[in-house]
Length: 165
Image (cartoon, rainbow, N blue to C red; front, side, top):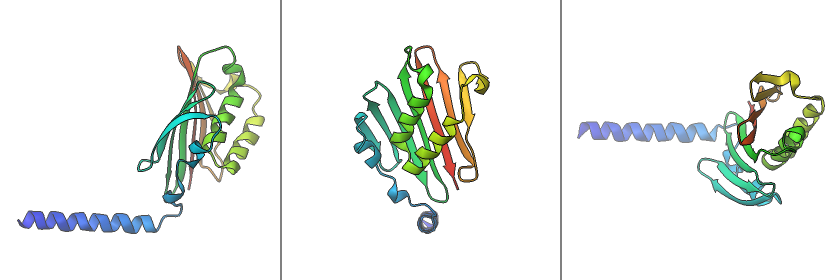
């Protein structure tokens, strides 16, 4: 009986800490909703888990987008777009990254990505491992900001990871 009371008190204490910590967040998780998927003209259908703040969408171009957002002391977005392998995907890699960015990012973040991608002419010097390209776009605002392109046997995967503190 004593253990149950201690466990109950400990649980209450953890809940208090959790609630207290959430009230001191720099970024509000409440602002993370599915509105960006709901309003997109490129999304055919989607699912959104409001508790986990993640979604999946099927796009008009045949791609599938997976996105996870989080906020409290930090703000972050991790997104990936899977596209079937065809002749126009790889030569137009910037367009596909920008299409995904338009969908999952705030306008200011999208514009920043657009400006940074304009400075990159080709991916030749960005190859790290066979079939994977990584572009580091980190700066003072986003200490971790990476764009990756993976070439798999039957599809391409474009991903954007950004973290802001």
